[in-house]
Length: 157
Length: 157
Image (cartoon, rainbow over all chains, first blue to last red; front, side):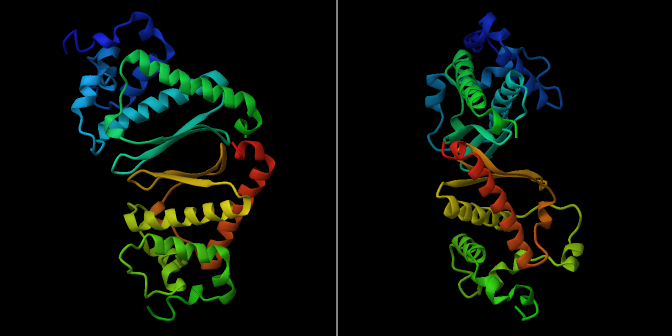
């Protein structure tokens, strides 16, 4: 992989954040044959980055492949782990996709739904940059933690 | 279909209940080619009934087929419709299964999880009788309505 290809993901501070560390862990967890062992974190997360040019190159309509769905699960798993480590309660993600790439993802804590999102165009799942990806995760995290704080009785069920 | 085959599902009162009516509607909704048009409600719901003998005839380990998964969705859809008609808030089921027949089903109302259940041995999904099936649905319904009553603010989110 060339230096240019991973240039979007080389900010040293960013690589130290809990989110990126967790994403790294999640991606290595779904790699039973050690194919990712030689990859750095930046290289491992490179497929998540869809620059404008790359996105334009993907057809508007398409079926998501298994590898992409696994990446998507890794993203929501990482967010769940972060929610869990912040509030001490188990956060469970549940993702359902049709073959056409439409679906829904939710994360529950106790009996509380802390994330509920419709998914579409899953075959184009990606973020403009790693820092935008982290921003997105942080946004979901803060909304979730706010909900848990407000309805802690339901989250504790 | 012989009279014996549907004998477990012929109680007239039972056939008039909201649950059975809704199950009938759900099953016909997933029948785009009108294959079920000639079937009575009892015949339509017959595949849901697994007598002890029938259950024993199914291998312990097996993969659920699409038709079975569709039946399972119909069951949880019907329960969602009943929750909705009782409390006036939208109830949304979400079912995720692995290919091996393990999974999780949840029903959410607003930000409240009113049903959260692990699924296993999905290829053996069925009930001893239609009345037992209705009992199961009623049980889920009453737990859900109790939760909605208790945490109406979260359900209304």
